[in-house]
Length: 237
Image (cartoon, rainbow, N blue to C red; front, side, top):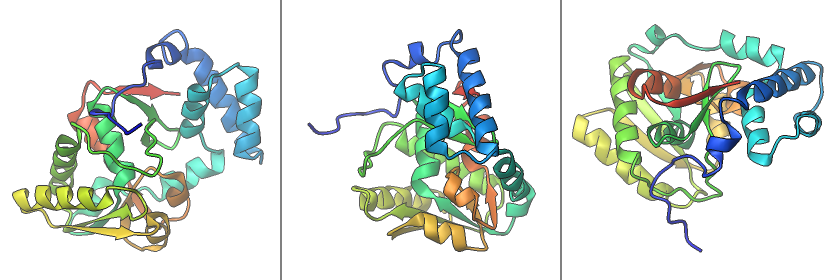
């Protein structure tokens, strides 16, 4: 069956899985997982241990995992985080899908996870295909406004070539940029993680693999949501 979604909104079970009365349990699970990760446990084994202990369902385990990292990872990521002033007159390289889907989800009322490292992450999963939703154009507009307000000289977006519809999204991004005279370039590459992990430029992402390897990063999705999506459903664990 084809993907007929028109929004990047919440899962039907999210009101129950992430209800206010459930949050304390999820926070304790997240704290336990951070403790185990900080002591060298692998994420897979530690998540199973914690998930089983607290009887978490699959989507709750995903949320707890995406919110957590070890003590060392927290310190190192925050040390490489660029303040807004550092972007003035500089280039910004963006992890396109990572940044865009989080803002789309926030606009659609989806659960936004507040990570221990200060990032915002969404619960979306593309499964190799990106589908344009109602929130795509406004999300790009908001991201563009924030980027422009920071004085970024050039925005270079990277999209995963293997993901279906990347070419179509590239065209949409270029149309939005042209309408505002924003200096955007959009590139399709086999693996954005590799490109963004190795550059000396500031990157925009919440991808843990990139955060642990890049030279410097900026918290663009969070900056955009905090500024423009005041009703975002942010879950802090």
